[in-house]
Amino acid sequence: MMRVSERTAAGAGLAAAAYHVTKRFGRTVALDDVGIEIHDGQSHALVGRNGAGKSTLVSILTGLQAPDSGKVVFGGRPAPSLGDRDGWRRNVACVYQRSTIMPELSVAENLFVNRQGRTLISWSKLRRQATEILESFDVKVDVTTPASDLSVEQRQLVEIARALSGGARFIILDEPTAQLDGPAIGRLFEKMRTLQANGVTFLFISHHLQEIYEVCQEVTVYRDARHIITAPVSELGRAELIDAMTGEPGGLSVPGATDRDLVDPAGAVALDVRNLSGDSFTDVTFQVRAGEVIGLAGSASSGKHQVAETVYGLRRSTSGAIEAAGRKVKPGSVPAALRHGIGCVPRDRHHQGLVLDLTVAENAAMTVMNKLGPGGFVPPGRMTAVGARAIGSYDIVTSGPDQPVADLSGGNQQKVVMARALAGDPQVLVLINPTAGVDVKSKESLLGVVDRAARAGAAAIVVSDELDDLKVCDRVLVMFHGRVVAEFGRDWTEHDLVAAIEGVSER
Ligand SMILES: Nc1ncnc2c1ncn2[C@@H]1O[C@H](COP(=O)(O)OP(=O)(O)OP(=O)(O)O)[C@@H](O)[C@H]1O
Image (cartoon, rainbow, N blue to C red; front, side):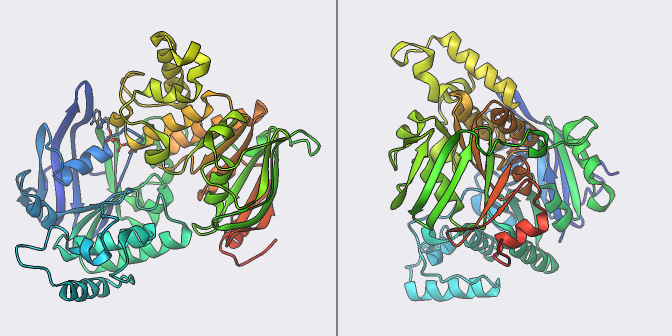
C-alpha cells in the first residue's frame, strides 16, 4: 500500500498534494511530517480520530495557516504565498460544517463576495449572473433568497457553486453530512459524482465510514498527528480502516439496549410530555420511565429537534405540558428545566454549548458550580478535578484541564459538551445528535455513558440521524411532519425505521 512520497514529484495527475508537513501549537504537535496526494477527478477521504490533525491539514491546504515546515502543491505548482488569497481561492475551496456565507446577504451577493472588483455593482446583472452560475451547476435556489433562509443542504450547494465559479477545481468537504438527513446525503453524493465526472476533485472528511466506501476512491488515515496509510478504498476493509485509525485491533462494539434489563412498564415516570405543540410539531405525547432511553428519529423537517429543545426549555410550547418526576416544568426556560433535573447536549455546540475562551475544566463544571463551592466560588483544585475526570471518562484529547476549549478539535469539544451535560447527574437527559463530529471509537464511549446513565436510573431522550445512536434506545419514536407516526421497540430493523422516517410506512 502506498505511502505518500514525492513519487509524482512533477505533480502529474495530482489536483493537490502536501509533503512533509509539520505543524505545532505550543506543546501540541498537530501534524508530524505528514503528506497526502489527491488525484485529479477523485474523491479522496481523510479520516482519523478526533484530534488526529485533519482540520489542521485543511487549514494548511486552504492557506489559512502556514505549516512550520513542508509544502503544498496544486496541479504540480507550488501553492501561492499566504497573503495571496485570490491565488488560493483559484486553487481550492473548503465547505465547512459551519457556514462561511454571510446570513444577511442574498444568495446572489454571497456568490460574488470578494469578486466584485472595482466597478459599480449592477444588481440586475449580478442577479442574472448568479442565476446562470447556479443553473450551470444545477443548483435550484432562488438567488434573491437571504442566505439565512437556506437549509444546510442548499447552503452547501451554494458554497460549492461559489467555489467552482471562482475557478477552483479542488474542493474540501469537511464533515459535510454531519447536519444532513439521509435523502439530502444521497443528493450531495449524486452531485459529487456528477462534478467528479467533470473533473472536479474532492477531499472528503467524515466520521461516517460507510460514506467513504460509498463516495470515495482513495482513503488516507492520520493518527496522532501522523500519516498511517493511504490506499484505494476497495483494498482497505472497514475493520482494517478502524484498526488504522485506532492503532489497535478489535473493531467496535456500540452498546445496545438489549444488554440492559427491560424497563419496568409500571416504573416511575421521569418525564411526561403531554399533547405538546409548538414550532414545527403538534400534539406530541410520550412518557420516559426512569432507566429508559427513548430515541426520536425523523427527517430534518420532522420536528424532532424542536420537540427535544422544548423539553429542555430552549423553546416555548404553544400548548400541552411537560412534567419531570410528577412536577410541572415551567415552559421555555433552560434554568427551570435544569432545576427539574433535565440536562441537555444541545444541537449547536458552538452557540448553545460551550464558552470557547474558558478551559476544559471550567466548561465541564459550568452546570455544577453551585455544588462545588459556596456561592459559586470554586476552589481551583476542585475545578481541575472535575476537568480531569471529564477528560478520563469521555476520552478527551487535550493537553490538560486548563486548556481553553477553543484549542480543542471539533470532536473533542463535543465530548466536553457531553461531560458538562452529565456533570450534575441529571435525571432526564436530552441529547441532540450527541455523537455528531465524534470519531467511531469515541462514539462507542459516549454511547456507553448513556447506557451507564440509564442503568443508574436516569431517563434519556436521544435525537439522532444515526442509526447506531438509536441502538442504545429501548424505544424509538419516529416523527414525520411534526407528529409522532410510529413507535418501535428494541427489535427495530433498519429497513422499517428508515421507511417510517421517510414517511412511506406507518406503524
Ligand atoms: N489553535 C490551536 N491551539 C492549540 N492546539 C490546537 C489548535 N488547533 C488545533 N490544535 C490541536 O491540534 C490537534 C489536532 O487538531 P485538529 O483540529 O486538526 O484535529 P481533527 O483531526 O480535525 O479532529 P476532529 O475529528 O475532532 O475534528 C488537537 O490536539 C488540537 O487540540
